[in-house]
Length: 292
Image (cartoon, rainbow, N blue to C red):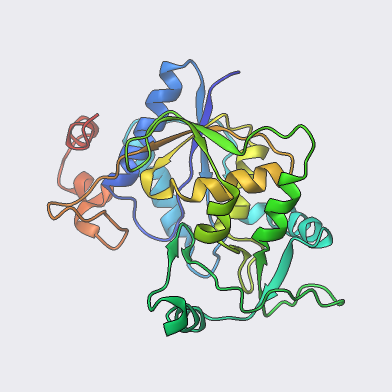
């Protein structure tokens, strides 16, 4: 199996030190294994993506000395694939429309009978199932989000004959330092993940759906990304199994944080790669700063 990974930024702001670390680590691991590291532009959110930020991504990565095969995959070119997969999942009764807003979910999950505080999972607040079930004969509504019915999904997976355990291999570490084969219990998916959104209003798919389809389309064998996405991997494995797609090996890495221990964000321009470039720093200095 040839090693193939990817760096997949969103063109919604400047790349910062954390992005530099993830991109350089992915390429280092690929080169060490004699494989390749692809670049993918995750611009599915057209309301926030900007051409100037995409151009800045290419400039910053080239300045870091990184290279990638052409052409670059862009999610905005793959909307038909996302829509077709949603239609397929809908036809199997695995999706339902949801009109709840964030405040509705917070109110429902914070009610006294629910324990007083919302349960936070890898996709945010665990959805209480307010709109479930709901499969109108006319099909999905454009003004509604689409959620995965996790109970139906896990029942379907559990009923598969000769099914392998629901699990993935971790070669980095999760936030607690665990590596190796990570099992995903069905009851944990139901209680701690719930019915995640696979398509938001006005969008062809969510991050969870698009990343699974894109990784499969690009033949990604190893996913290198931050430990903040470790919990989301369980969602991705469920989708891979439902769609009969291969599950890559995962390498979740530590996050680059500021002096107060807070993870970096795109709004933190002081640590943007472009800022270090303007100050006259070198790519070698950035490698040292992030510990490579």
